[in-house]
Image (cartoon, rainbow, N blue to C red; front, side):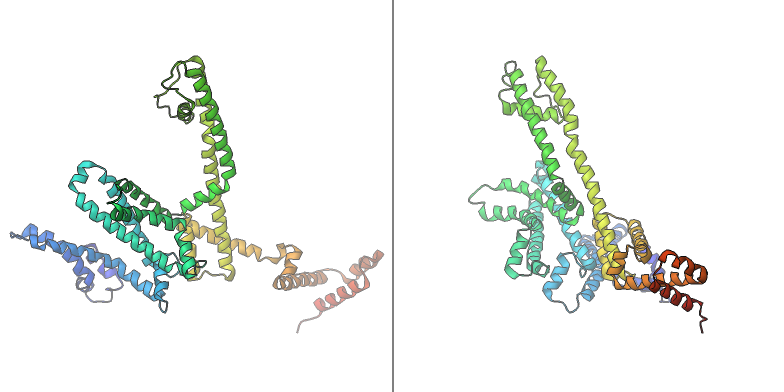
Length: 452
């Protein structure tokens, strides 16, 4: 109803004398009507219309409202390109993918979420008993989708720089982290299908939850976090060593003081390590607790230390994560400066900018603010007068502009300064050489001469 009401505002139907009637005759409007008409017919017509229920499946055709424009855009952007290049544009991010690539990503994300929800619900016995066949079919469809995606990525990866060699490039892609995650998402299914008669591999079903890792491809937060961990690894390792040292020492003391009083709970040092970790992490399950005075004193000290010890890695990661985001945003600003070297942003540059902004979770307002800031900084950097002389000399264009500026200032000085007094001061104690005085006279005469 809303589309029918707003049809006169649509540029496709606005030129028609009867835009609403023209919209009602359009294919999408017919699909919309067929999607809802069975419900209303069954409500008003006193006959058995169960046979018309299949018409409700036509609601799937409403997806073409999104797919057709995306396909047209994709087809136009990939004119003259090979089939493999088109597949690469579809499954890998790039300038040729457009909206269809985004829809493909959303389709994969949809099946990841659906398959993981199915795995979770399958563990509920009452639901599994009723929907056993449905879960099997759903898992088979999900595996088919993920297998097709995995094959397409291996097939088209040679179009990516660094993977161009047919065999070596595909092996390199297969060894990448994202490809290994894709493989783990489908491997349990095939192992269970082909090896179930040799081994009981039902335990592999739980590994289907690893499909959640596929979502890491569609967010830049995971990559940022990995960069943070790699960069701060020495500090994190030192913090982990301190925690390990503290755990082992307190577990040994706990075993020393509590073993005689509670031999069944503090049976050995490894079991005491469990108590030390639980206490240090401030969890305190209560299944193992000291009863001797010295044991309780150690527990108090350990609990107080745990507040600070466990806070160190969390604080480091939080600070480093914020710092990494700042670095990446500064990098984006530098890229903006390079993009604006010609004063404008091309369509390809806008696509790259939007992709980076999406990865860094920047809003349109923040991106626009960065563009304005980059333009201002570029204008300041183009002001030759504020640059050091060696940087001016390194760029011939800057050198020419600076020479023109200095020459103009010297002419202004010649016009505004008394010639005789200037020469008297210049010749006093040879403050200027004869060549410099001759150059001054030449500039003064040129500035004083009338312009025709």
